Length: 182
Image (cartoon, rainbow, N blue to C red):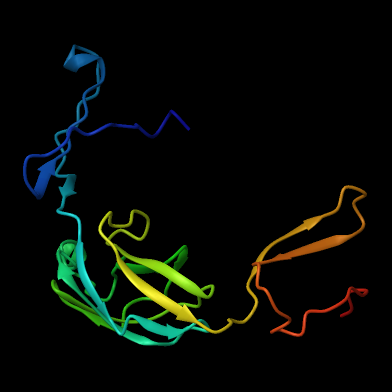
């Protein structure tokens, strides 16, 4: 809203660790507001993926895989008061899976999400939003349950259109068109 928030761009760090965040308005001149708080920001090394085993699984999801690499627990101690509060997520292609079954700094045990048949990149994100540049391959085989991608009204405003992911068959029994019912 501009009145109670500030947007800051932080410089790159030379190493991982916590740094204090200080804000000064007006360069600290008389009449400005300065923060001498203990608010900190954590720079961390991004995760690196070395391998995924099993590298092939059902497109419906649910395959248990073991991901090996480094830096998976870089943010684990960030919220030490609640160790179950983790933002670590694994992405299969463009789909983010449920939270990991277990993990430490070098191993993640993860249940796969669903995925379109074919090859997908596996990436790890420590903050739930930004995913690693390093990746490994996972191969989805078979068909998955349809996934609704969106709902919208047609231009005339009385027809509701459901958009599903593209899948080359009638796996979900989605044939024809009909009136929506309760």
